[in-house]
Amino acid sequence: MESPKMIPLTIVLLLLSTFPNPSSAATAAAAVTRRYKTYLKTACADATYPKLCYTSLAPYTSAIKTDDVKLCSAALAVTLQAVKDTSSLVSRLRKLREGLGKGDVAVLKDCDEVIKDAVDELKQTAKVVSRLMRKGAAAAAELDIANMRTWLSAAITDETTCADVFDGQKVSAAVKGPIWKSIKKVERLTSNALALVDKLAY
Image (tube, rainbow, N blue to C red; front, side, top):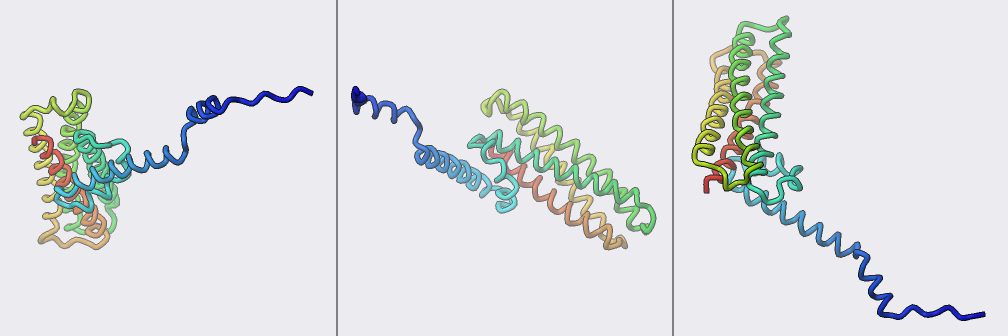
């Protein structure tokens, strides 16, 4: 019986080198993840509410990577969704009607109007950021930055107005509790988004 031929060692080593090393790939992936998280943590350090900035955007690090425009886009998407949720909450409470006092009705009416305005202002800002994502951060003109700052500042004013209408009104806990908690969160998210947009000007 003929003995099987031995495969030369150089060929064996060549074949082995063509297969990825799982350990090396995992290490490289972990390093990239750490770099993305470090970037986000550094960027959020300049936000008004750093901890909220990081926790709200941490799930999107793989999409953001280390891109300032993508960071702003993610921040705006998270903020816009939170404001929409607040708007929906106010609308649902307005439809209850039964059990609502005069103070409840007044607060819900005012909040409904200003939160819808905030939604529109955030949408306008998001449109500009979407355009910048297609063109690159270098395409950010002073007018773009100025418009985004204006819209975000207006959104913060609208959100604060909703919180302020509770003053001097007799509002039930069923109305004040959920709206107050929701509106304070969106105020902070919007303030963070504005801080991140400001960084694009640098």
